[in-house]
Image 1: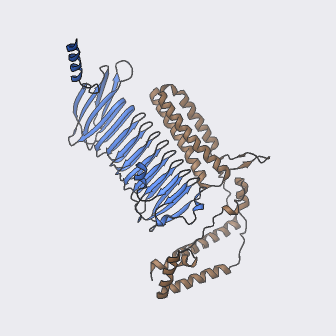
Image 2 (image 1 turned 60 degrees about the vertical axis):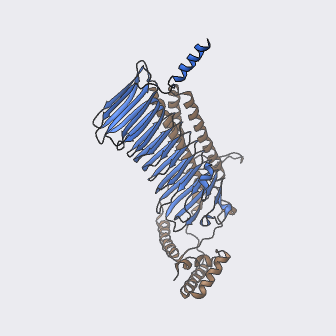
Image 3 (image 1 turned 180 degrees about the horizontal axis):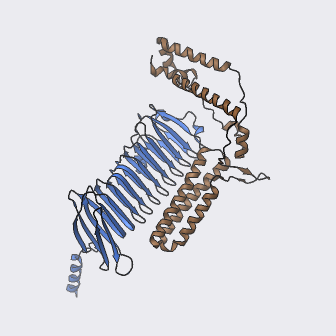
Length: 223
Length: 298
């Protein structure tokens, strides 16, 4: 059996190959009985999967998630239109994972899962439907407090820093603030976006790191 | 009158240039293997070369009012300066140290060069450039306003510059590099772990991708340029919010280019996908292909 072609059969079945690749696979299938058998088995899996009745979940988790993040479902047009294809080993792994997840879901439905207290990003809209505010609730209070403390410490040590160094630090803090503002603005449009959440958190971390560094320099030079 | 003028000009022409101040301190001290060199210099330049002898040759040039202190203990040699009245003035050090000797240099208005060491190096400055050639084990270089240039390190490298660029060449070992307003360039890198981030600068990486390695490149407004072998084995995750992605490699062609924006992660596979490569730019261009880093430098 040729690994090269076996691994492409799923894509062949999903019509994900280019025309030339498709012709190559078809030429290979003429010669390789093993691959014809594998392809037939894949056909069978797809047909059996298609004939399974749709089973609704015991409880729909979206309502809870929606309430917690205060968001609405993303429009269908923005959902991924990607096709997914698997090789045979991936099919086997996916089937095993599906069994484990199904079992876990049933157990949770019967016994009740522990509600998570993690708050990530909340999006709120005012009654007039105007400005949308997106507080990053899990860390903003602590973050603002830490930033305020460090800025105060830096302010008190300002006299011991060179004016050019102060300018450089302030310019760089402004650069980070712009990154934070842009990330926040993007999050207003897309509150559940994982990348934006991580990006915002990293920008905040960068600001804290720079403030700590500047404060340390000021205190060293002031001592 | 004319003859007098000619004589004055001739005398000035033969005078030493102003930067060649007479050495105020020229001393050689023997050092025990295992001891480290610690230099603190408020302002001026620190240049450290290496040799095979177990001794330190220290040349310090400074004003008459400044006093240089060399303190020796079984574990270290510490060099610093103080002023007769108030802080020390500018001191330029030219130090030759054993190549095995770990080095730590810090200062404020201090330019630091460490050349040829085969030991650990730590160099930190507020307003000065840092250049390190060589270094093994832990190598750390941090400057707020100066650039950081590191060449030929073997070990765990941690570098940062707040406001200037970072250049790393011919390095092997774990690399962590960050900046805020500066770009970061890495060339001829052979490492299994590379973590690079900046806010406004461009990140360029040219080097190998090791099987099982982890490589992360993230910037907010800058570009990310990746020049790696096309036959590398890597799972490449690309994310951008309002930027774009371009690849010269057949294996790194997103199935749907419109999916590349709004922070959606697009994962593509090179070879068997062994290494983990993450490329992120909020608003810049992510470009993969041969020569992309060299072209950017030009």
